[in-house]
Length: 136
Image 1 (cartoon, rainbow, N blue to C red):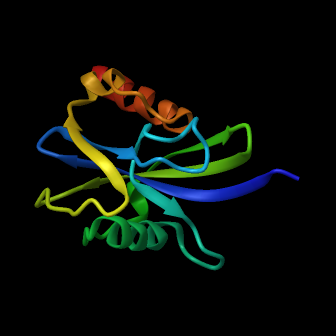
Image 2 (image 1 turned 180 degrees about the vertical axis):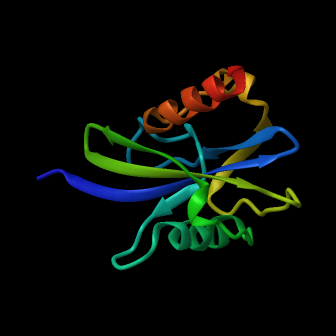
């Protein structure tokens, strides 16, 4: 039986640019060093937006409050070894300060330039949505 994870991701915006985080080497090559929107797993009984606040605090020392109405979209993606349901939220960051505890690089890019990075497959639908919204 393939493992399934419910995860949350933050599309963090500052000054018209979006924060893109590069993953470290992991168990699976196909997500190692790929770019992603920061976030993580939702624990049992945890609200999605509070899970995201917790993950950003743990991984990036980022203190950010995420309103429930910041919801953007949900992505279902199956990788070779596991499947995820990823809920994305858009958040504005007043001060672009954070510490990289688990990632190897961070870039701030305008939506039009997001495709220049090598994204994790599950994050691509979010990239596409952000580019569409900028065009509209």
